[in-house]
Image (cartoon, rainbow, N blue to C red; front, side, top):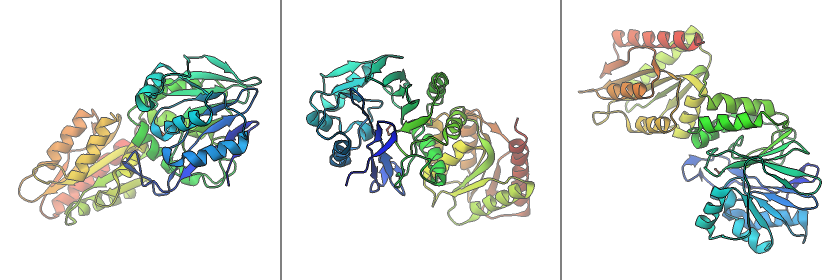
Length: 398
Ligand code: FEO
């Protein structure tokens, strides 16, 4: 049975949940799944906003039909061409052959590249307006949030923003669609993970988009993933604002690899000391267990980062290397950094970690602590000194 919800007068949610997919983009774990959101606006003309993943086309068409019956759809607004939202476009064109596809110049070339579609397209530009009758739609170009063609669509009559991937999160929508219908606690950590993994590289484009959105009143944000935001709009905008300025909250992420527990001993000493000094938020990740997407999420969220690594093949531990490359690719700035590690016969990890922090132009809070083989009182004191220096820098950060 189709599940559609009228989220605003004559604006219907027609998206679907995917509870089976394990990895988003083939990379990022989805413990509970994800939703692909699409919206149908009924007026003298009807507009569909985005489509869904190819695996859900049939269900999607049934949802639309539950609202629309046999009536035609006039426009498909394409906010974003990534296939989790565009893969049902061909099926929509088959079912509604007179539908006009609406997007910008880059959308046009991606439509041809992905789907061989060359006709039935209406190109729009910044601030263009499309009248549906009683309602109008206004378009804002938001390139690199998170592909070059991305745009947002705003309905001034209901003050509804169709924001594409922006302000979305992992996790299905369980029964309710809007945040006024459901308990939202589970979504916040997934919003941080979604942002840091998917959008994190594009801080400046996100800031540019937020600047444009300051011109409009927003009563509902309708993203392509996760709940529709009505009650929590201020919180959602502020999370995006802070993350895209790379501004960390007070707190420290401690990430460590360990083969036989020696580096782990150092991590435990440091974490205990940090809490003893008064840092309330410590997020520890053992790389043998945590997926890198969760580490990345906390590294984006919190101001302090301490990394511990055994030396492995004269260099940094492989899982740590994986994290470093992801941080570097996202050009994350403004972190306060410390590092420690151990080796058996020759070091290498600390040298690499220090070089990494220098490339990132991060503040290094204290000299690294490097341990040969097993723990000693001197190493314990050095770990405590590292924790104290991190405490000072993170808690007294302006
Ligand atoms: Fe949900 Fe960038 O696609």
